Amino acid sequence: MSIFKLTVLAFVVVSTVCVYLFMRPYWVPLYHKVAGKQSVSDVIREYGATSEARLRPFFQQAGVQYPPKSVTLLAIKGTDQLELWASNDDNPVFIRTYPVLAASGILGPKLQEGDEQVPEGIYSLEYLNPNSAFHLSMKLNYPNDFDLIHAHAEGREAPGTNIFIHGKAMSVGCLAMGDEVIEELFVLTAKIGKESVKVAIAPIDPRQHNILPLAHGKPKWVSELYTNITDYFSRYQHSS
Image 1: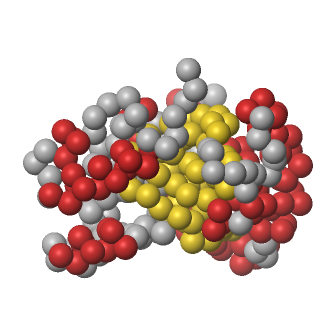
Image 2: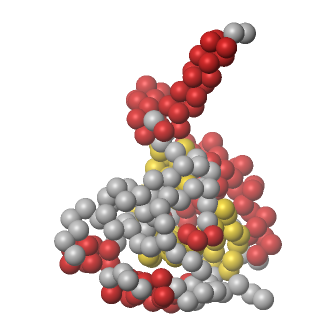
């Protein structure tokens, strides 16, 4: 094959990959218009059995009945980790740790639309999206009340929105977990109800490090935020 043909072939392959990866927010909705949208129930039927087969052994090993009554996801940006904790009473139990495949931005809270920061704080879930451009997704309630109060006080009219935990391995302010992991978390959340899931996101693990120095040079409210995050994480201690 000539150098010209190889160059053309390489261009076509690279272009196709780029369109698939980076244009997903545009072509996936068009695909759903043609193929039809799926529901949460459709996702459960398609992925429920296999995702639960992967997840149940971790619950059994932890001694927690599946599905649990409540779940907490602890995200640690500095180490790209997401911890799954579950409870059937008032005592959360560690289930497992997932690697975060992609999380854009740097340490520090999200401030405005387009800064590509992953938020830091304590959040709930607004809804499950079975037709995500990134396989499946779960929307955080960012900006929450705390975020909005300080955004308004500082005149930040667009603190950002549309922050998800989703599949695939690319991120623009979201936590990208890969397809199999989001299937597990999506199915688990659908089973117990989004109201029973909390998500806390920290810059580094406040159980191992004092995160308050990271607020140095930032607005005063960041110290308050990091104190709240530290207090929240303190409820989730690994057994020695």
